Image (cartoon, rainbow, N blue to C red; front, side):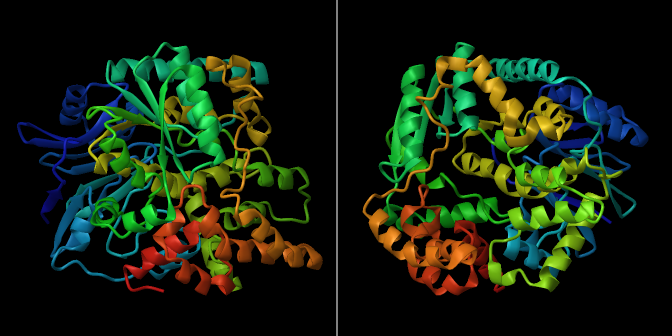
Length: 541
């Protein structure tokens, strides 16, 4: 069986050949030079592959072929996904799932489990895709192809022993690691311009403040959204405090509707397609503005704050509280699965039937328990985080880097550095609850002097102001019918008013008429329609 490699031509991929060995590689390593990786792969024996991959530190993907086997490997976060499929008796491997799916004899058999998962959550569980004949390795996996056999292996999983260190020791270690990561980033970027999408949150603020602390000069910031939105007001104040140039990209309903109907957007959807998650589109409409204003250099490097909130514990708060009240009459795994369903598989309330929830839970638990074991109260949060790590974070959130690549820009993800991943997976949940350790580190160090009460974090404010009295009048009746009224109001608010007050306006990728039609299907947020529209592309409802 022949192995056929199809890599899209771009500046991001490089090809090397030594004697009978071929290497296609993308990304960079903190631990190795690329020629060292090639030479090691050329000499390595098959049983040593896993241990070698464990030594690699960085964001990368590669395909290596010698006379005996083919090795397909992605980094610990799946920053660049790879895909493979059997077509016409041959194994095809590509960085573009579209190039495989559009092959003449690709078998388009729909995976019904995947459709359910994307409908309810926006992404698949595990290595599944929309099509049964399309395999996409999850974060930390590698695939060996030998003698027509495809074998999946794992060299890293977001699970392990928790640290016994005390709080102060871990806090000091966190500061040291954070500084190490950003010092290394600055060495790698050199004199090139760094561009930071700056919000009012903790993560992008950490990025710009520590760059300032370390003396970075060639840094620019931008914010976007509807005029008067809180995020941009705070973003501007932070940039001014740090003396970094800042620009605001104004978004309107008209401009966004126009963009989401443009050829540029349609081309991006084709470019970023991975058949295992909805596309990440937040901020994509800002790039033409940034280029037209000549605000960014052609060789600039984008550095965003993904995903400090997740790693530092922001998503385990409810689970932690439920675990603290746990009694033996309950099943521990149910707490974890209920939280995953509530947090990530509730895009459409009408789809949360007993049958669908049961199927999703089975898929989740099968995926989790392949790599997580010995469940107890102390490590239960890692069972939850492992699942979100390999599915929502790596397939959806991190896929946002395709936006930069679509416009031919480089990127760095310092808060997804391997050092951060290794650190946060060992931190006990009591230190991650409400991001206690992360926020403590930020406030104690006060990088750049921007961690103060005068620059609030994520304080939500409704905008535009004209909608506030109208929304208030409509909300009054719901307040008269107790707790059920709160839930009904959320669905009504999402369908009727969210279109007008969404700060990023990604909701404009769907028409307001279409949104109103779905009012009784209990939509959760803008991503509900993104999942619906995504499946429409496959003629799936």
